Image (cartoon, rainbow, N blue to C red; front, side, top):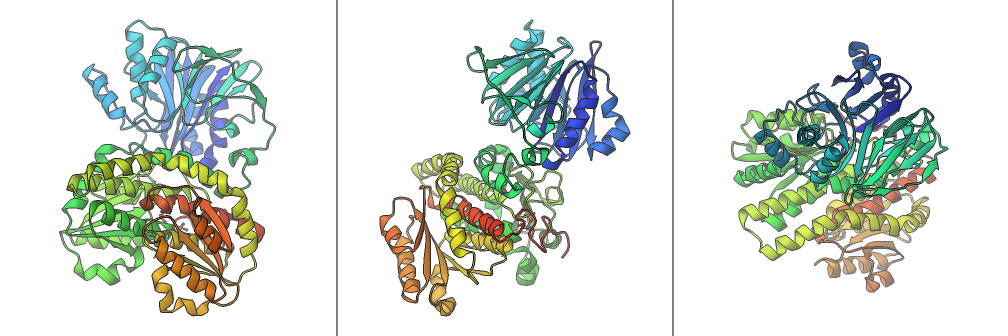
Length: 605
Ligand code: G6P
């Protein structure tokens, strides 16, 4: 998500920080800023736009002083504007903070601080932090005490760096569920969210652990455990890798990095702004007809969402491919229609055209997107952000699993609002939602060898057939899209029950059929489909529960996955498909980050 850097040392901080920020550009960002401390004054410059442009306009790299913090922002709370750009400061303009992550309880903290007469200027969650520290300083605490106390009040994820004019030779840093690294130099020390920001300056690095805080000066640093306040040693490691490898966090491609990032991105997608989730649920509840509209992967998420809305909230909805929305439903729209658009970029032309049309007919437009400030966020009456961070690989991976997770949370909220399911069912589902990041971690660990073997087996096949039933139809569709767009092997995907009505005629000896068979109510029927296909010579690949020995026996190739709630299986079962697609592309010598003929965001009709 956002990139953060801090510097304290003999050099001119701003110049070094701007160079480091440029190393973070590859992550994607919408605004940037720098703060330094000099002669007991804070200097802050920031804006939306590209670093080079902002620097030319505001002279980021000319700010005076030997200590500073800097930031590239990918908006999560508040539009990508100058005022929302980091660093953020307190009322006295003596504390500056940069932050990467999502604070869950910022609304409550903001209210408490506003009641104490603090003035807020931005819409960000981050801004509560300098004010919390200011509150501690007002009460006579040292900067270190005030910082530690503020950290203990924060719920959510963060990598933070802070400077204060009260201690102008120190840099404060902390992390929870977001990476943060100290760069150890001669005559300087640095801190950054990403080793690429440090590699130019030093290869000696200290990787902070979760819930570590650090007090850094130019010749030394101390690490303190946030929970207990006790000091702790962390080893210094020599990181001798190229900037290019570092950008991909050691993975050969961005796509693989993004696949492996999913436990974290899913954790962030559980940290939604509750008031917007409520609003979305309320507006969905008011509609007489509900459409879920998206393109590509986002359409597959809509399909999964429609099963979740129906099964949890008992709300029927139409999942529609964006380019087909007007031809199919254009003439039936009205003021009682709600259109929930799902779009990672928030800029897909097919989606925006559908929304324009619907808006002209007084429909209520809702949005789910990964991009604050996108056109979708401007046309939607209410929208929710999925918090997956920028995705560089053209093929959507982490953004798909997050979309499904956000739709699941929306469905649960709606179920509660409509009183449609029993409390125990809601509680059970909530528990399963919270477990998802850990289960995906398990999936990544357990399937890494098998997916490679399978990719080898599928590599020379002329085409691949994928089947799912119920919500697993959306998994099958997403699996098809991933494999097809990355390996260029033609794939077909069908709801398993439909395969007997035509598609089965393509089956002959050794045609690969991938079955998505989670342990849900359709398992038995799926076993029937597997038999049907095997009887005609198909090579049956089955993705099923890791403890399902019957399926294992039946399959020619089996990938076992941990259990989750059936309505969340599009998340866990999509992961092996992403990996299979990735390995197929690599084995065939294609670039998985940039599949031919495709664009990340298609802004033409
Ligand atoms: C393009 C991308 C797909 C993406 C689709 C929808 O076709 O290549 O990966 O799923 O657009 O994008 P959106 O930003 O609307 O989710």
